[in-house]
Amino acid sequence: MIIGSQLRFFKETGSTNDEALLLLKGENVAEGTVIYTDFQSSGRGQTGNSWISETGKNLLFSIILYPETISPEEQFVISMAMSLGICDFLDRYHSGSRIKWPNDIFINDDKIAGVLIENQIVGNIISNSVTGIGLNVNQESFPPVFPRPVSLKKAAGRDLDTGLCLKQILSDLDKRYTELLYGDREIIPGEYLSRLYRYKEWHPYRSGSRDFTGMITDVDSSGKITIQEKDGKVRDFLFRELEYII
Ligand code: BTN
Image (tube, rainbow, N blue to C red):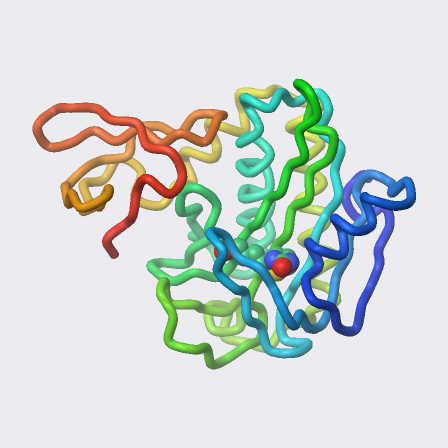
């Protein structure tokens, strides 16, 4: 077991990703070390957003990895593997979770988990990678934000043991990470597509000031998404270049 080989708990912290990045600056940290907490005072989300979570109700953790055999050009496969691990965990309680590109986890049209991956690249090597995951477990009410948040309690219809959930999700993430490093590399991108929210369906999107209807046809290991438009044109988008209209 790599992920979860070492656990470090903080009753409260600013951000588990920041704790992980701080740890990496100092001592030698074992691969798979997990930093988890009950409360973050400055939890961070993607694109500078904050991640707000009620004390002790949800999963808030970060994993330190050294994926040195994965090249920086294909670094999105780490994100794919982590998203799939989260879906494997959710399958234990509720089937049908989907990955919204790049790595939000959805149940129907509502967001249950978010992932913030911070890779440090030195030369042509990913020298370390911090995967921060926030997953709503028992929280019942949320601020009115977009996309609408949902919790596992709401989806599964019962209160859950967050300690058990942490154990289970770490085991599921570990299986996917091991598969990524030592298994058939093609499995992960293929399964990512089969879990993708709105894959091969027509939906509205926005890029800059242009709204259009398109169909997702691919996401590659660099993280680029390919969309076919109604007029037959096929375009690629990078993270932040495409907005979903839900
Ligand atoms: C997003 O959906 O925008 C990503 C949210 C990631 C939140 C998690 S909670 C644990 C870890 N620590 C942080 O500060 N952020 C991540």
